[in-house]
Length: 285
Ligand code: A2P
Image 1 (spheres, rainbow, N blue to C red):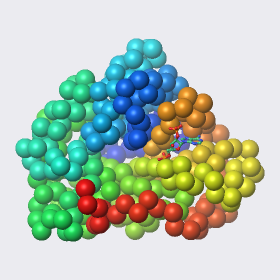
Image 2 (tube, helix red, strand yellow):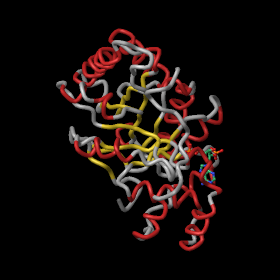
Image 3 (cartoon, rainbow, N blue to C red):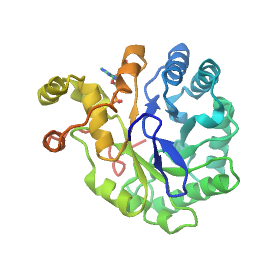
Image 4 (cartoon, protein in one colour):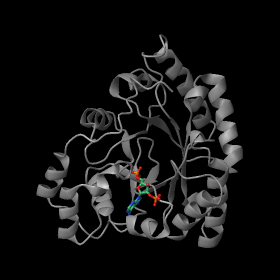
């Protein structure tokens, strides 16, 4: 990947820009509108949101403003959203999708994801629930209302049945950052031609104060955030960079003009576990 508009190719042939702008924890209203508009003006062409973030209307407004001020067409932007856990199932997913589209004020979506798998800790028929959600997504995909469909926070055992269906998942968006690599999930995705996206590539800001990362950052003359985002990319994983701060939105896109050497990649790979603790087999939401 040489620029932020270079793309990963999904298993349906569609392209997805290799750096996304994330909106989790972005306050609804002017902050979200300004963040998304600024990102588009600065050249980001991939926006990631979700119904549960509670900011889709503002993200939609930011997209409208950003397209206008950057002078680009809707087709030049890649937009992702996700169906929330309370809306799993066939009819409910169709309804959730309509609400998301009305809030975003878009007439198609580039990517729609199942936000978290239904899992055995809460549902005896968890696999069937995921299959029903997937059936609705497949229908929307075949109708052309969504250009690609996929998963988020799915481990291999959650996705097994879905891989046997007519339309296979194209994406799995997982927590991935220094201290949280989920190698088994990434390998399962590789085997099944699923592109992996990284949420919280900065460990939700927590790894930014790591002394070893600071040393590596100094060596390259970069910020720790840039080192983390670059490390994600060099693992062929797609980082979703979240910031509402214009200077950081600008900083976080400057990750294409340097390369981490194998030794530094390995040192970051070996960092102590620093995950959020959110495990799809244990969540209670
Ligand atoms: P803010 O949005 O206030 O600018 P993650 O993507 O891993 O969840 O991390 C998001 C957090 O990291 C947010 O609190 C965001 O703050 C912060 N952040 C994003 N980019 C940078 C950066 N370049 N330098 C410092 N903090 C950053």
